[in-house]
Image (tube, rainbow, N blue to C red; front, top):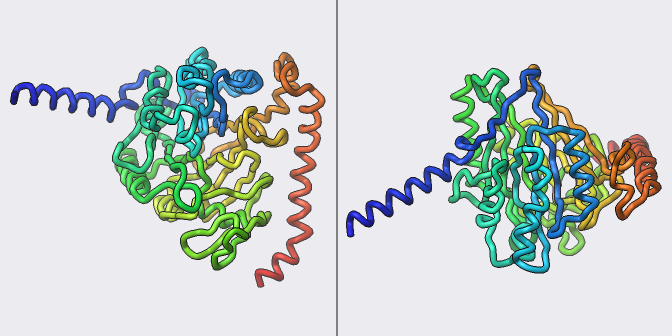
Length: 395
């Protein structure tokens, strides 16, 4: 009996080690190219199922061909709906085939809808295992004891392969709690700080990084929405656990770029995410989806907070915002990064695009391209017009 138990224990230990070292054992190595460049593409809120919407697949394929990314990051609410369990799981292949065909690695974070989709009998751990069954998946669960599933980091090596030049943090922001949405929790932040310190020690200095999650952090929502002291009840968009409440009014002075077509939808809770990343000083920007038709970029305590608009054709979306975000890194200057939006309305008007053959014709996409700069102008004009009143109110 002892021999049997010893063998079983050895098997369990081997499986645990295999799981823990998944990222290291992957055939894919994230590394800056010889030209010092690294490109990643963010896909926020596909919110689709089997069969994947043809318009989405055409836009996704065209964006991949245009961006030629070294990595794709899914920001949650990914595969959701299907008629049967078999079709639900088939949706994964239908979504990911464009990446498999191009041999592009991908990673992901889960969203609130990933835990309440058509295949309700499965857990996020089982869904993560399904993603990991694809050879080009780099997602893994760094510590199963942490809140949620799939929190992990991915290191990008320098072009000469001698050190970790950059790092990517993938944080599971959960799904639902009493009073609203969940958030990144304290145990995940302690894990982040520990790994961040290890990277700093191993590489002779803090490793610059980006962070990805699904739900907007409360600290960001408080800046981009007008917030008051006290509980507003049903009159508030979010009543925070610290005794403050966000109204339904966007604060156009709280963000520098883009616009808000819906209120930010954070968790009422906050366990110190922005304090943690501010103290460590290695995260340059936090990217999140969740609110499909917002495109704002806010500087919160020196860190960019970027709401990536939804890519979905299957859930609610706005023709001005819909698309994919590309992040460009340059090893020669890692103090900054570049953002580019590949709007579906612009992709649709490129030569050879299949998008005008789908649910929307060229006129629809032309209209979006005309309205987008107009919307940006309106927001900037409102800042100028309302600044005296805002200054007076703040004083």
